[in-house]
Length: 206
Image (cartoon, rainbow, N blue to C red; front, side, top):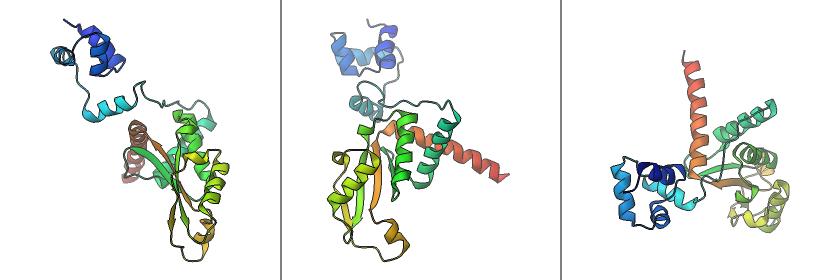
């Protein structure tokens, strides 16, 4: 017999997978599944199980609450930037695109300081226009301005030139999108924004 305490400690507390528990306890996966059900311990769904298999050491990111007014400002700024500029359709990653490196740096700082995202985990996509500088030069320009490595960039997407005017000048270095792939991080930030949305919606509805 496998005790409820033992299984709760391994499956819930340490978030071990069923195969890992079976190996740890030198038993079969079938027996582990039997006793999990017997003790009423809820099994993780497929998406949760996949997340754990990709993150065997637990969540790679941890929310750090703001302790100073400067940190609170950064927290609000980061949420506001994603609310206004971020990609909402993708639920598996944080994505934000812009032409301004200072805005991208501010968002990266938000993720680094409030969610302990290592700079090495950021990935970047660059959309450039064919009459601009070479893609290699533009990737190097962005990498230098963001303090990251060029190896963190996907292959640039080259599109036909935009028409003249303000936007063309604004996008002279292309449009950069910063990515951090993590479903739970995307969900947590999305939930915080939904709470803010409900607060301002409710306050404006009265």
